[in-house]
Image (cartoon, rainbow, N blue to C red; front, side, top):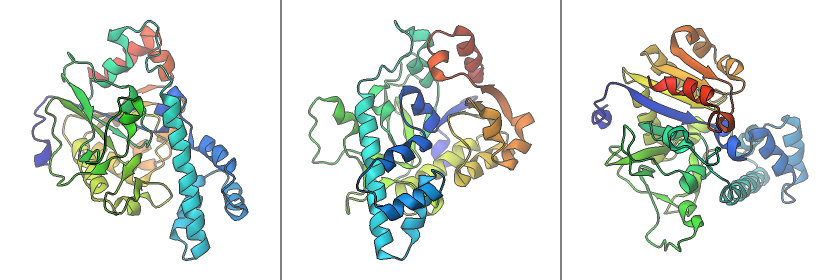
Length: 320
């Protein structure tokens, strides 16, 4: 807990985002990633059959292939991961041409950037680079962030910026030791499942958590183990509040941390078109919903930040 003592504040406001967050800017949901994988000509018929049999759950197929002892399955796993990385790269390139704000002209007071700036830390399960490209914290908020930063990560010494937007999602590598999350005027952005542009500097292996054995895979990377320790510790703060946007409550290791926080008094606010169904996916969370859930919004962010002042006011109650 020592790493968190510098946040001596009355209330800690945290954000957790899933695929449903990036979806507002055109990012694909898991079902749509499945559709794009099927269009990849490098995916063989054996993998295709498994994908169809999984009813579109491509991550379960990846887990089967990754844990298989068969050499051909290992090749299939590599091909599947390469396909997914290609989808993310295409997504990041598409994000370059997206408007980040949904209201035109944007109202600074009601903007997405101003909203995100109100959180003491942003956690995400997404591996895209939407925020790296578009989000600049609004200086003058309660937190007075000067920039967004990714704790424990850096661009390699060989990186030479060109001035293009692609610089913002160039390859990054872990930079130990992992001791504390420094604020120093910068807002922490913590990618719990890695990122499409992260690699291990010594072997070049991507730090990208996919498949059905996420908790096991996370244990292989010290940067991600540290991230999850920080996530748990922050949720255990007596005054912690967690807004959850676009997460389906389908990852047991994430739910475990949330449940531990709920038992310690954590309050949550769920933003999801199917929020009530999402809460039911984990009986432990559903059981505590009456005392733990302080709000639900089923409106898409495109509406909430696209001029719907009533929806914006409702969402802003999280910070009160």
